[in-house]
Amino acid sequence: GATPSVTLTVGTHNITLEVEDNDGATDTDTVVITVLEQAANQEPTADAGVDQIMTDSDLSGSEQVTLDGTASFDPDGSIVAYTWKEGATTIATGANPTVDLTVGVHTITLEVEDDDGAVDTDTVVITVEEGSAVVCITAKNSAHKSAGRATSWWIFHFAAGSGNYIGTSNTTTSLQETSPGYWDEVSSCQ
Image (cartoon, rainbow, N blue to C red):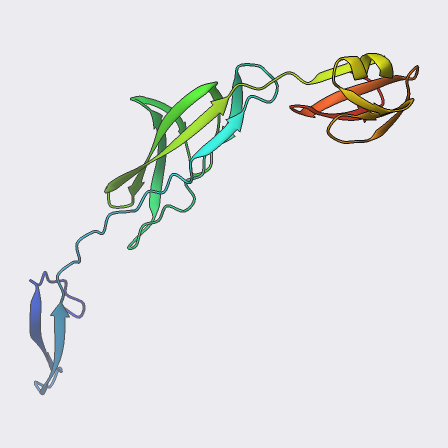
């Protein structure tokens, strides 16, 4: 036939085509077909991102964390599945999911699978630390000085740490601790 189908083994094959017209004349042509051995699948490389330290910002006992497996790759194809596990439990899928993690240390494993079924894993450690309540106190500046939240020079008072001028002894001021021993004046305590 004009378009035959054949199965060829790995190697070089010389295929000759012979044609004959309705008057019995013939002609031939040869084509060389080389069948190569299929390359072995190269495994993907999982990359779960860098370890993270987060703070429970709203004091709820947990924090939303975005996992990042986008640096994972497959050298000879594509990644078709991203599975995130803590221990044996799947906690998310996808390259860049957001998960809710409780306060503590979490060892999370990313497993990626390529389009030929090969897998690789990588681990990331996420630490969620307890948050601390914001301290804000409204009082007369003389009381702030007595408690160590302010210093004074004569009758003038300054917030401890920041050094911001906050008024005289009888002025009522709201001070918020922005880091241990560092106080800033705020318009009011919420």
